[in-house]
Amino acid sequence: MIHCEQVRFAYPGEAFVLGIEAFSVARGEAVALVGPSGCGKSTLMNLISGLLVPQSGAILVDGVEVNLFPLAARQRFRLGMIGLVPQNFELLDYLTVRENILLPFRLGAGGGIGDEARARCEELAERAGIASHLRKYPDQLSQGERQRAALCRGLVTAAPLILADEPTGNLDPENQDRIVSLMLEEAREIGATVLMITHDPLLLPRFDRTIDVPALRKGGVA
Ligand code: ADP
Ligand code: MG
Image 1 (cartoon, rainbow, N blue to C red):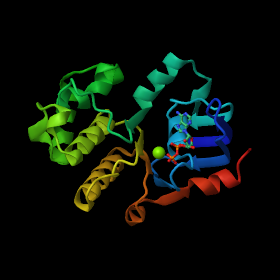
Image 2: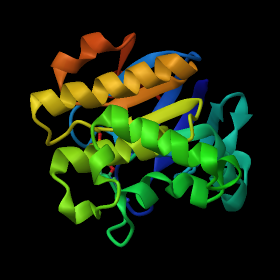
Image 3: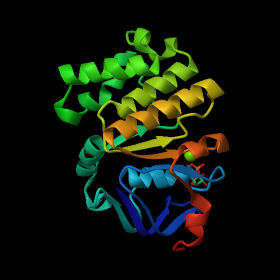
């Protein structure tokens, strides 16, 4: 589902360089991405989702070399292929929780917001325990509820690849467990591949495999 080869990325004017020789994630795998703060976990995830483009090398998602596409085509590909759960929720405060969860459809995924999309939103919100909050605004929710809303938004299109950037950060153990269980169960049901960044060693046994980003970089292209 994911293949990176000879990837080199640097932010303009920054000393940080992410160089990776090769790594792959198979279809249906659930992989935890670990490493100390600042080692490039989010950068790698943003390269895979096409939010960033490498200076050299190839990144393939579902066999497609996304970084060759122009911006609009990358965005379309991402909407159809990837469910994103960003690090700091990124819920829009002027939209209700329901509207936030349905946002990928509003942006054009799955042919827009229809009955099926609404039903999927209800079902996920129910499973995440936030069904009674759908008419509220994000600032009326607790931290854990906001994180679950962001997860529902990442899962709502049933995308084949789920990329989650520390979706359990700042949550109590009970909410952490709930988020990870919901994500992994949902992914298993639809056969989706999961890549999740986490700092928590207790969560690692829940995944098929752990990838250590500093180890990837050691074998990388400088
Ligand atoms: P992690 O997610 O592992 O904590 P990041 O991928 O966010 O690490 O960051 C890797 C390095 O790149 C850090 O040194 C960080 O300061 C730098 N960095 C991250 N985002 C940007 C950016 N938008 N512009 C410039 N430098 C950045
Ligand atoms: Mg990060």
